Image (tube, rainbow, N blue to C red; front, side, top):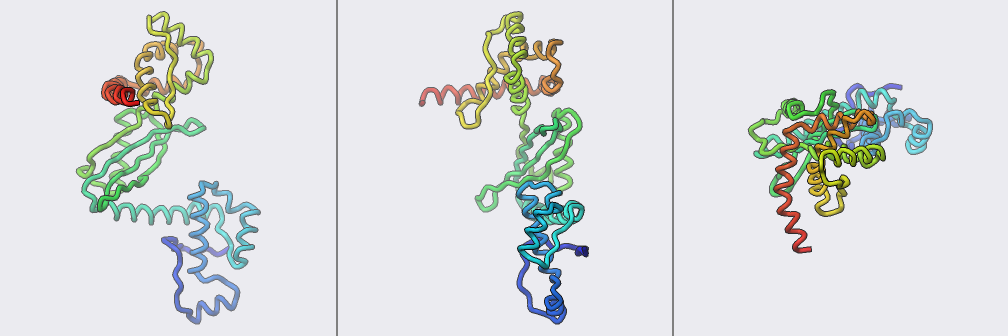
Length: 286
């Protein structure tokens, strides 16, 4: 199957005047390069925006569907999709982002660390800005992080991403990181394990802490994030002691606890002090 060496996937194809060359291709039953690239764009869009696996384009059902929709079109192979079409599209989108934010004077950079089902750690960095009073946002990059996501590591990763996109540091007015995600991961683990809950109560008794259960935040419930972090701060000595108990062998929790260094703990304390005012206000008006 012959593939175009330089696919044009920047947007839908436009109708152009027929030439003797295109007329000859139509007469022979072959697609013009313009039509072929338009179909490649549609397939690439389907795979990327639908989060479908690359192997979809090699499946029998997908190829039969493409044949039924356009008998002249042969969809790209998996390797051509992953090695050529998607990187080409990514390059175009990257250039568009660089062009759009080039003249924006102020940018905010939120980042979010997350863990896949296979326990691999990733960092996603986005950018928020306004153009003519309209708030916009773009995902700048998602990359695997093979080190513990300390403040220094996250700062280095963000700096590399900004440099790759030619974003001037002087434009950055705010950078945020999702430390609450680490706290939430610890709480989720304790909630899922009956043994950990039992050991946590033992440590609470030994340390003279209130025997309160941990609270998990709910996105649709007011103040739940504040309550989760407040309770976690209250019980943090017991959580640390429970995680070090030999009866608990879950490395994931210890890894998350290792990431909750003193700087994160102090930031969480500051967050609780600040949000307590808003929490009290909502109770008064509810």
